[in-house]
Image (spheres, chains in turn yellow, red):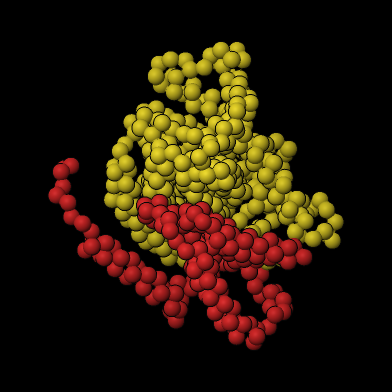
Length: 372
Length: 170
């Protein structure tokens, strides 16, 4: 094989599946390239559908929280075709590149932002065998790759040559760089519990107890619940969601870093936002809420229904967390930029450090007592 | 074959973006071009089977240091009357010196792929790095502690050097 082995070692990724389809002589890098193309197509389709569904859901949730209906007309039943209509509108809109913008940066930025978000999906386990590449680094890969998004947002803000865009980009840079620390630290608790960074491994380890041995129900539940709350707060800030939506706060900065974008480039930023929300929710699901495990699902193991049902369980669980993010957005007012920084550095980070200490003592004591 | 192709791809990305960073007139665009260089280096680490190092490179350099560099550049007034020729001269001198130093080392190196077998760690390197922290005769933990001391020094320096305004907001 090759030096790329640690990136596809465990034998349940897409490349390994492809390797089974071809004769043994086909070199690894051809399989890798083929796998990359297929993975990109799959992820792109998933994220497009996800973004369309999520915009519709977001508007419905917003409507019902504000005691109105939200979209009702397009398509008939509760305006289900609204998102498709919006998508078509964005596709046929004129693509405006400002005369005074930095053309290269202006055009690269949306692709970089969306590309980084899509790349992170590679390490997400949608089901026991539905993962593009079961990386040993798992969640660390997701954190690292999605941190490149920040750079794309700064690029958009700078390239637009507009002060509102630049303000948005600066806020984004400050906010995301600060919240990466509590986000990474809050993931340490489940990582210590599982003894692995791989999300797929986490899913496998939560399969006991008739599919209910989730981290939040385990003997470390008293660490799992606060660490999830910290993770979720930091994830809201990372994905620029309200109450941390300072980088694009409409009432202050027009639309923040994507003020000058229109048409398909704007929709790239839009898709990135929903992709990032789903990504964070999926990491939360995989680490805290049992990944694809659900009571009774194991009974179907071996049948043709098992894989699709496992994927459905995972996606539904993640979408519930996405719904909570929307719920928070329409309930909690936006906080000020200095409050954002105070919260990140003075509260979330120290609390995470305390939890990391407690978790290391607890997991060590458990291992010492059981003689593992 | 695959590795060779990947090597040339990452080499072109690294060097091309480095040249762009060096020669671009706008210093902010230079910083953005640095992204390609950093990602190319991460690709090299992957080829050397150092997966943890590669991802750390992306997280720390592309996601952290580069953002910091951009922050610094955007807050600094632009230099307009710079001498481009002088900059290229300095760059050539630095690259030349580096090449001489590298050549001295490179002459003795074994340019053979035979050593690659032991590089290909089957299941990643995080575990070994973690265990290295706990080994008694390892210098990894003291090394990391030194970086914590440096961080404390930096925070202290900022605290001493900051300008003090009378607080009105509280």
